[in-house]
Amino acid sequence: MKKRRKKKKSFIYILIFITFVIALICFISYTLQERAKAIEELERKFEEQRILEKKEKAYNECLNTPYKDEAIDTMFTELMSELDNNVSIYFEEINNEYSFTYNENKAQYGASIIKLFEASYLIENARNGNINLDDTITYTSNYASIAGLKLRTRTVGEEITIRDLLDYSVSVSDNGAHIMLSDYIGVNTLKEYAKNTLNATLTINESDRYGYLTVTDTNKLLKHIYNLIQIDDEYTNLLVTAMNNTYYNGLNFDNVTFLHKYGYYGSYFNNIGIYNSNNPYLISIFTLYGNPDQGALTKVNELNKKIYNIYNTNLELKEDYCYSLAYE
Image (cartoon, rainbow, N blue to C red):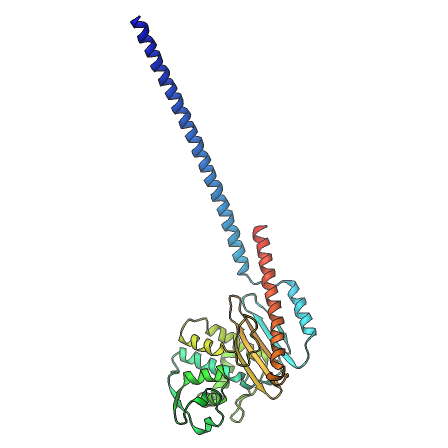
C-alpha cells in the first residue's frame, strides 16, 4: 500500500510539474505574443508619426515657397478697371514674390514722403558708425517759423538730438524737423544716397526740399527700409516706432496696421508703408485726391483694403493648395 501511495504522489508531482511547465510555456508564449503585438503597435505608431512629420514638413516647405494663385491676376485686373489717372500704385508681396503696379512711372509731388528717405539715410549711417544720433542741432528761429506739432514744444536756442528730430519728422511729419535734418545731411548728399543706394531719383533742391517721385522710387525705399529693420537693435526700434503712427495714416484698418509715412500738398495725397507681418508687403499709393480731411484719406484706405483682401485671398488659397499637396 505504501508503494502505491508513493507512486501516486510521484505521479501527482509529475503532473503538477508538467502542468506548471505547460502553464509557464503558455505564459511565455502569451507574453511573447503580447510583446510582439506591442512592438508591432509601436512600429505602426512610429510609422504613422513618421508619415505625419513627413506631411507636416512638406506642408511647411510648401508654405515657405513663393506662390501666387492664377485667380489673383484676375482680381488685380478687376481692381485696375476701377482705377483712373488720379492714382498710382506699387504693391509688392515679399515672401510670395509677386507685385501689382498701376501708373508706376508717373512722377508726382511726393511732399513729406521725402522725410522717410532722410530717416533711411540717418538710420543706415548711424548703424554703420558714420553718424551719432545723439549729436545735436541748434533749434533757431528760422526753424521755429515752420515748426510742426512736436518741434513747437521745444525752446528756440535749444540743442535737439538727431534722434528726436528723426522721430518728429516721421511720426507727425514735422516740417521744421525735416528742414533741420535736410540742412544737416545736405541736399546733394541725400540725392546721391538715393541714387547710389536705392537706385532712386530725387528732384529736391535748395529751394524745394520735397520734390517729385514715382511709386517705383518709393517701393525701392520701402524695400530698403524693410531690410534695415530686420536687425533687432535700437535703430530698428527708433524707426519702427516713428513709422508706427496714425497721423494721416490711410493704410491702417480694423486690426491691420502698417509702418507708414504720408505726404500731402495741394491736390497730392500719398501714403506709403510696410505691412510688417509674417507675410509682409510693401505698398505705395500716390493720389490726386486732395485734402485727406475731405475724402482723400478714406479713398486711400478703401483702396488698400481691396489690395489687402486680394493679398489675403492668395494666402488662403496657398494654404489650401499646400494642404492638399501634403495631406491628400
